[in-house]
Image 1 (cartoon, rainbow, N blue to C red):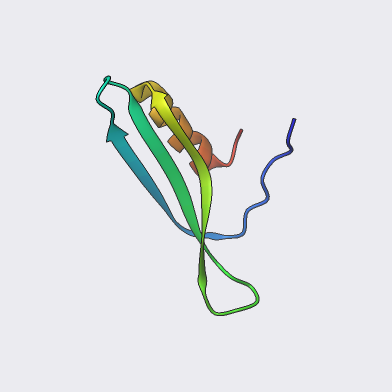
Image 2: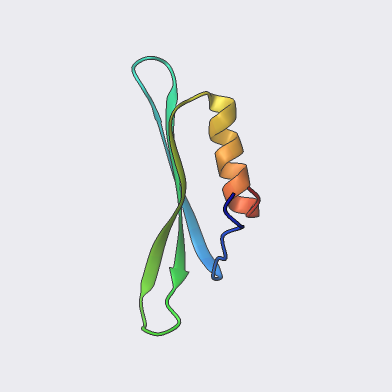
Length: 69
């Protein structure tokens, strides 16, 4: 089992949610951080899932925001 993801200070989160034709959802959560070595923003995918329920969408977002697995 993989250990917890080490994350730099997050500037912002971006969540994409789309309802799929079969009635389930697609969710993607990304975080924007600042690069320590160069003056640039970095996007890091936290999680993405397809074919999940609305409750699972909210769980993915909550888990990503709190940093829990």
